[in-house]
Amino acid sequence: MSSIKEKQERLLEDLGIFQDWTERYEYVIGLGKKLDPLPEGARDAEHLIKGCQSQVWLDAEKKDGLVFYYADSDSLITKGMIALFIGVLNGQSADAILTADMDFVEKTGLKEHLAPTRANALNLMATQMKQCALAFAQ
Image (cartoon, one colour):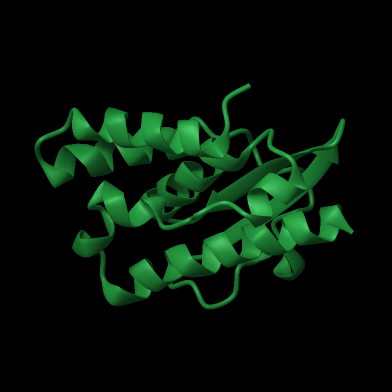
């Protein structure tokens, strides 16, 4: 199993293939389209990440000591952005998630092409995912 750091590095390598930020966004949107579906009933106020410009729902479960996330959004780019986080955090221990450096998104170069409200949503997503991990760590 790859560590969070290894997954982050692989993602950055994958994104590095694309010269143009538009191509990077197309890749990210594609990641969002491949997300596992949000569990039935999780598209509710309890699972909504508050403060995002788009609606983003996040759910998580712990299986065999590892955390797995499920998410959806009414925006393709936002769904793709949370897919970046899910791609690096899924299948990791709660402790590993809690200590993970989430600033890897800065290195993708995507954030600088987002509106400030969407860029702020990335911070909210990362925070919410860490809060889910914290609940499982206790």
